Length: 249
Length: 116
Image (cartoon, rainbow over all chains, first blue to last red; front, side, top):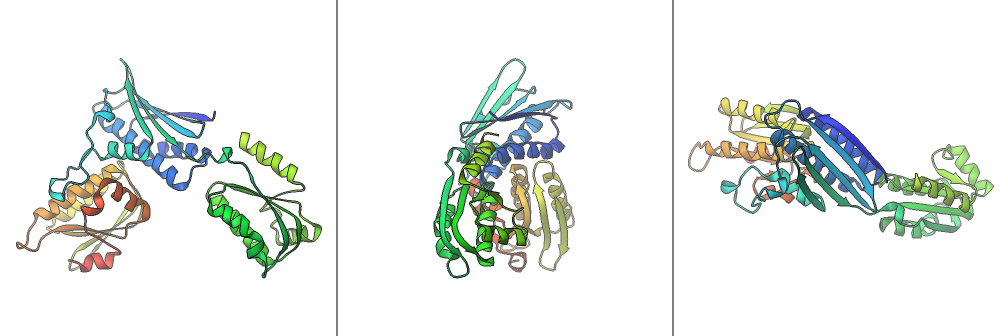
């Protein structure tokens, strides 16, 4: 199970370091940009509470953070040695009250609950422990989506030939293997379409892998310098082995 | 976080970029209070370049608007803090916390300044 720890001084200028630490977790979990932002905000609120409340009158406290990824869930734990402060006991603000009656406080805790699946607090004689959990779509658990294309990838037929791939993309695919063994011709439009698929997958921390290039197709990749841009394997078996080792890394 | 200030006839425009978190919220609070101290109670906050907001930032916004609205020119006219150009993520925080209905929000700074 991937995990990491960090201890920082309980000061507001640690928030940037904490943000980096959370970023390493959400990146490792291959969370979507939105999920990653939700976790960032929840942990930021939790850390701010510890700094401003648990350690309200202490200048030298620390926060110990840990993240752990297990079975499609990211768990982030924050431990401090300040005053016991149970954020789960703070009443939620009335977010429907009119402006005149609206209270300014309590929003951080409210956001933590909204953004995470569970927020749990515990304390003993020396430490407060806050555990935030969020489930995410587990990309590694989803089988590789494999497409054997047939025909020409040129200006006229690329859209049709690549249609099944784009359907999978729209449905949220993250790991795509395109087998080009039956593709006899690749033009710049075909190349551009493949680049778009690659870019879309990169944005969601996914991966596009190609295999089975015929010599004339391979030459187009080589001439344009795209041999180095794409993950290309000789056979589908080699490609799957590479995806497998990446997933278990 | 960076704040740039532009003085207009109708209002003062503060454009805020970067992160409005616990670390940086006090800077915005101070900037707004400087304007209040000069008798400037009509303020537009252009948030179009804001990347991130957390609850301490929200708190500054609501407290500032309460103070601005306490200043009255006539029964009908007075101070206010109006917002412009909310990026998606900021809008999402506003929706989650009910802030969308607490402020007058305009698509861009020009319209917000013009509303005064």
